[in-house]
Amino acid sequence: MTALMGSRGTGQAGQPTWWASVMVRSASLPLPSEQRYRYRQEFLAELYGMTPAEQRHHATGVLSRIWTLRMALTEPERLTHKEAAMAKPFLCRIGRHRWQRLRNPEGGWYRECRGCGRQRDGIGGPSSRGGLLPPTGAA
Amino acid sequence: MTIPTQLVLRALLADPAQELYGVEIGAAAGLPSGTVHPILARLETVGWLTSRWEEIDPRAEGRPARRYYRLTPDGMELARSALARAYSATARPAWLRPLGEES
Image (cartoon, rainbow over all chains, first blue to last red; front, side, top):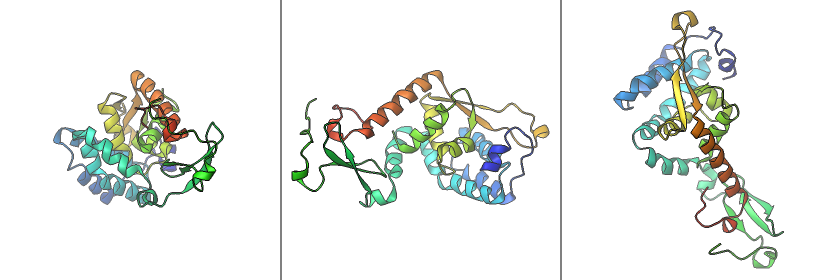
């Protein structure tokens, strides 16, 4: 990627490999017909200046997320929920959170997952919740 | 708002006057290839982003024109406030947040 970033506007960009071109051209096929040409051109243009390994990585990434892009173009509301689920790290999705201890403004402790931001109040049971305020039902 | 969307908005807000194309946005946001375009498409649909084709002579440059994205003036304001809301929501325990506030 750094090679690409450095090549912006210099006109020294490398040509995409044939298989990367085929991959991104194929990737655009599931897109709505009115958007297909635009994204095909966009994906192809992005390959210029990348090394073959970067092209493979990029083309694979584009291909693997093309249905998400199609959904974003056709059903933007549905994507929001799906994307929210997928944004959570895998370990968090299977319940393996990485908890860290943090203080709240009242001086009590709570735990927060470093990966997904899920929070738990109290550490070590009710006895250690000294500084915590009770949940405010209707603030 | 999802974390990848926040990262994309942060990348675009770093220099709102600068236009970036998809791979540059992905690199700035630290997101893998393919993740950025669905987010850009959705933000463009809701009017936070605008995009245009690069104005170059492809023969002279030796490559096709790229698609450049930038935040709209409204999108800039909305993105800033959305990021501030997301930050304050994750910085406080759930029970300290006002009712109805979402991340």
